[in-house]
Length: 305
Image (cartoon, rainbow, N blue to C red):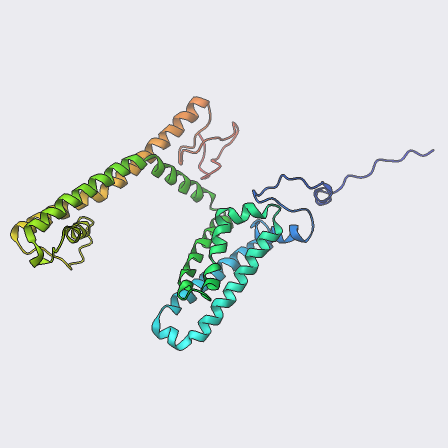
């Protein structure tokens, strides 16, 4: 009896299709089983494929165009001449974005996780104003929230390093929260004291009709905005205003120094922690976690020494 040879191994693509579907997916939303939903999923959620990249770039173009239409529609002269055109275009964009949102819901294994996630909420809010405008006049003005959907550009062009920098900035702001809160309380006390002083010195005859109005002037002056709608008329008031303008320069620099110091502290803390753990640290960006035989940084590409 002739001995049967073992079957030839499947090619990589066939092996991928032959593997049973599991709940483990590369996306937190869950990749669906093979089929039409998997095909749609790879187009609308993955930018690594040519079709997915083209879809994402087209989506960004549509988002920018829809925002331009909303902005132009807010100009009275344009709205009066092209109101019908902008109205039709807005509903075309709304229908396209609605279909895209439904496609994302239908093609993922866990639609509730997508719907309650950051991008899911933004995608929903980008189409709701058009439908709400049918019942609440003026709600369409909130359509510019669609600009938040441009955050997908980070995924399209693989700007992972910039996302990491956003994360580090957020961590620095969070760590500086108490210091910034104390600083803001000092600023509010200065606004209250100096605003009250200006109310006493200038009085209603120079526009300082109340302490809240004087505090408004103090905020405008300390932030170096200077609308000029309220100005001191006495020499003492002008001296006080000059002091507040100079004080405003120092006040604007304090939050920047707090956050910068915190970011520097966290940067050196990461490098120290990596040194204690025996890891390799990039001399350019301070990134850690490189392999022992790595020659270049995994984040910025600089040479590792």
